[in-house]
Structures are given as C-alpha cells and as structure tokens.
Image (cartoon, rainbow, N blue to C red; front, side, top):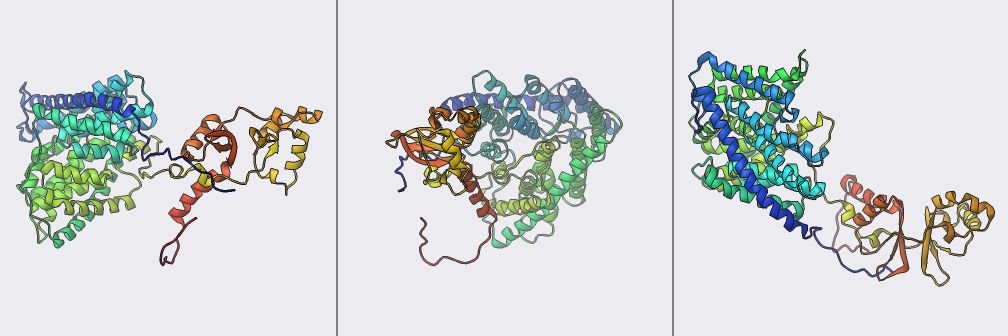
Length: 594
C-alpha cells in the first residue's frame, strides 16, 4: 500500500490567540510586581532603621554600621522569634528561600497560592532581613510576585497551565524590579520555573518583566545597581583563568549546598518544635554580626565594595567564612530569605581572594566572574547567571569569561550533586524535579510515519463464532491485533471490534447469531495520517482506548492504517536508542533515508 497523502496543517508552535489575553493580564501583573518589590524594599529599610538605629524612617542603610555592641545579638534573635510564630500560626509556607516554594506551588499546587502567603511572605522576609538576616530580597519577592500573579489568575476562568504562566510572570516581575534585570528574570523563569519553552508562556512572562523594569524606574531608580568601569576585551589567558575560577566556584557551590542542608538536618534532631528553630538561627546571625557586622543584611554595599576592590587581605577570608556560616545556619533554621545576594557576596569574596594569585586582570574581573559562577553553579541556571552579571554591571566585554566560568562551575555541580540548593528542598518533601527539557518525540512524528499499513480487517457480516475461531489460530493475521476494523462489502469502514468486545459478548457467541458489527463499535474515534502522534496519543488517553484507526481526512470511511500500543512504544524506544546506543563509523557522501 502506498503511503497516504497528507495535508500539512502543522506549525512550529501550538500557541493560539489565548496568548493575547494572557499577555494583557501579564502586563498588569508586571506593574503589580514592581509595586510589591518597592513595598518590600521600603519595609526592609524601615525595619533596619528601627532595629539597628532606633529611627522611624525608611532610608536605605546597612546594618553593618550599627553601634549596638553585644546587644546586636538580640536583634536577629527577636526577628527569628517573630518569624517562627508567623510560620506556626500563619503559614508554614513562608519558611525558606522563596523559589522552592514557588516550584512546589507549580508542581503540586496547580499554580494556586493562598492569599495569606502573599501577605505573610513579604512581611516575614522584611522582618528577617531588616533584623539582620544575611539574605537577599529576591527569593521572597519571587515568591510574593508569584503569589500575586496566582491570586490575580484565580479571579479568571483559566487552566492550570495558564495560571502557571501568570504565577511565573509575577515572579519574573518581582526579580526584574528588585535588581533591574528584566532579561535575567525571564531566563530564570525559563530555566527554573516554567518547565517548558513555549511562546504561550514566554511572551507573557517577558512582557511582565519588561513592564516591571519600566515601573521600577520611578519607584526604585534605574539600573545597573552595581556599575563598574567596563573592561577591555578579554585575552585568551584571561578566559582560561575564568575556567579555573569557575571550577573553584563549582566546588564552593557544592560545599555551600551541603552546609545549608547539613545544618537543616541538625535542626531536625532538636527535641523541640521547628517554630523555635529561627530563634537559634537568629542568635547565630547576631553572634556573626557582632564579630563581623558585614555579614548582616542584604549586603549590596559589600558587593559594591568587592567589585571596586575596596576589601582586601584577611578581611576577604573573614567575610567569606563568616557569611557562609551565618547564612547556611540561618537558612537551615527555616527562617525567611533569598539566596541570590548572599551567593553574589560569597562568590565575589572568593573571586577577590583568587585575584591575588591570578597574574592577569584586575580584582573586579575575577570578583564578577566568581559571582556569576557561584550563582550559576549553585542554582544550576547558567544563562540566568551570565546575563544577571551583565545586567548588574553593564560590563559586556566580560561575557566570554562569564560563559566559561559559569559553565565550568555547572560541570562540577551537575556531576557532584544530584540536586541544586533550590530543588533539594522540594525533593525533601517527596517531589522530584527533572530539569532537562527536550522535545517529546511524539511531537516530532506524524501518524502516517508509524502506523501499521497492513491492517487485517473483517467483514460486517462475519459471525462472532467465526471470528473467535480465527483469532485463536496463531498463524491467522487476525490474531496479531487487539482490535480489528470492520468493513462493508464495498470496502467502507463501518466499525471496530476489540478483544474486550468479544469478552463482553460471550452470551451472543454461545447463541451463534451475533455479527461482529453488532458486538463492536460503530461510533468510531479515529485519527488522521497528518496528525502528530502526540495529539493522537492524548486523544487515546482521554478516551481510554488502546488502539485507534487511521482514516482519510476527507473520507472517514476510507481506512488507511492502524495505530496501537506497539507502534507508540517503538517511537519512544527509538528516542531511547538515540540517547544510549553508541555506534562507530562515518558516512561518506549523502545518506538517503526512506
């Protein structure tokens, strides 16, 4: 039988006009995200001023300049107590980084986030950071922005996938507004939150991030937030050293990840409720802040000092060790705060230390590359880390070094750690995240490429008793399929009969009177040869059938083929072989496939 002609109705993408509606909603969410980010920054500044300086003002200030002496230990301890109470009697979901909670909502919560989480998360984070917590604001704002996006979506008649798009749009808007990094925010959404690469979701998320970046300007100012003097084009030697810096950052990323969850495991062994753990974490923050005040708070001023090369010598080692310990203990205690800014600080301190032994480049170069490598390696989001560093500094010439450094770090962490610092938290709750995205092979294959063309059929007048005799003969062609098409005398498709139909018709078989058409199904669910295998398999699952007949689109009574489980499994097996079957040899000339 010749291969049937098909009508090309397929497109590169499945996106339809719904993307316009989602985009309009995303624009609103983007503006909301920027406002929420500004409110969070205001709250952090206000609580910092009250806690460390006794001033009722919201001016931007670092807690590192406090003069509290030993009393500084009490400030984050009280903050930890408040957060523990909020988590116990408000919502446990306010604990942690923020990004894992957003992942959990997407994976198992059908992208629905409770309203109280949207309210309590920024307040708890502002208290945590404002009382000296060594965290960033980006994780909480990603969770909060996502919560507002989810709440907005819940007012409309949307699918779970569409709610996810708006949740992620809110998260990207929050990150874009906090750091003035709209492109990195979109990349974070693609690499970590969306679990897909489709215009349906990418376009609304990108619009939300862009709008948030624009609304940020009158609220928080324009970027970049860490401007540096642009470097000249990097030499080959510099790029090679960038790889070394990245490898070291990858090792450090693994150490930090293990430290955070090692301390979390220690906290779980304590003989009292988790509500009290943030108090211990807060006390450790206070002790660290008394020894080295630079470990307190978000630390944007410290990051600027690192990029300018203002911190040198033993102070760098102290900052790296102190921040790492305080941050990992506090995060392991279950308090509320983000990971991006601390990773930038610790990566920057590591790079500044390494700059003393690298014979080329200046400290700012290695500080920046190490920052990006630490972030990319720890979060397993390499494109986000590279573009994030560029948008923070506007130093485009370092891009080759960032690329090599970040990829080197990811090589280490991907091989050494099963999960990232973000996905480990989700995994500990019993949920697995697989972050390798690829096109489903069913979406690359048309039905006519895999369907069985040699289809045995039965006439509509055949008796059930005769069919039973035929299918019990091993050599009979009727015994090969679980279902058989029923044709009329002139070759028109009339129905289908399955093994299940035969079992349900045992009484009619005994009476030796029923025909296959009477026992089978005439209301057919069919497929067309030009359809994607993905769409047909989805239809089969929805209708709970194990096989389907392929007919001509313009004449549904003309049978063209048969699609069963075997053909579907063979398609999947082909992809498995492409992944794992290794071959030798080469092709000389043009290879023709049929």
